[in-house]
Structures are given as structure tokens and as C-alpha cells.
Length: 164
Image 1 (cartoon, rainbow, N blue to C red):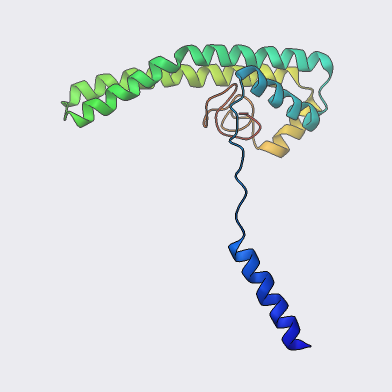
Image 2: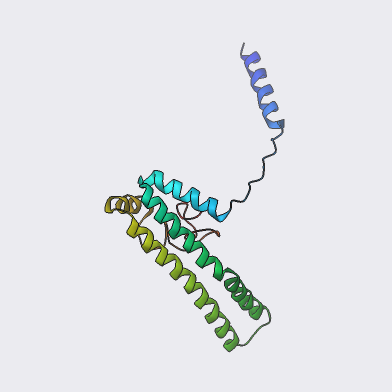
């Protein structure tokens, strides 16, 4: 009996070891509008948003995305210029000038996200803000809707609540 059980176990283990994984369908990229809709849907579930809040928040996130996207090419170009200057062993004043330009653009992006975060929070009730803070940490713009960091898309970069 034990021998039969051992043989069954060994056979199943061998079958599992040699099983071919099924190919996974590659993820399709969502449009900014889809990411915003998904994000608002998530927040609606989390915070029990009212229809008027959904409309306002969707507009805030859309405006934030458009403003931030307008800077994307400039930010990337500034970062590339800094990398190229370092590679070329540029002098200190050149690196200072290029990093200051990059920092200014990144500061503009951070301001866009912080302003959107404030607008988002003003749409919420006190209870919704408390629930969000409990879930996502302090409303300092470092995490949650309106904070910086992470992949491209509407809203702040980084936190799951923020980016879709």
C-alpha cells in the first residue's frame, strides 16, 4: 500500500515537473482614458464616491494627465542632456546648468501632481479623506492620488491608487 502510494506520488511529481507552461497573452496597453476610468472606478469602490464626485475627479485626473504629458518630452530631453554631459566628462558649470534645467522641469511636474492631489482631496468628504488617509498614508502628495513617482499615466506616479 505504501509502495503504491509512493509510486503515485512520484508519478504525479514527475508529471508536474515536466508539464509545459501555457503561453500567456501579452498585456495590452491601456489608453490614458482607460487608466483614468479604471482608477476612478477603484476609488469609487474604495471611497463610495457619488456620481458628481466621479465626474469631478475624472476631470481632475484628465487635466493632470494632459498637463504632465505636455512636459514629458522636455523632461526626458533634459535627463538625456545630463547623462550625455556626464558621459562626455563635461565641466562643472555645464553639469550645473543642465541639472538645474532638469530639476526645474521635474519640479513643474511635481507641482502639477501636488495641485491635482489638493483638487482631488477637496472633492472628497471628511470621512472619505479619513478613509483614504488610513488606507494610503498621510496626504502629503508622496503617495496616493496626486503624488509623484512610478510609471507614466494619469495622476501621481507610483502607488497603486495613483497609477493605472
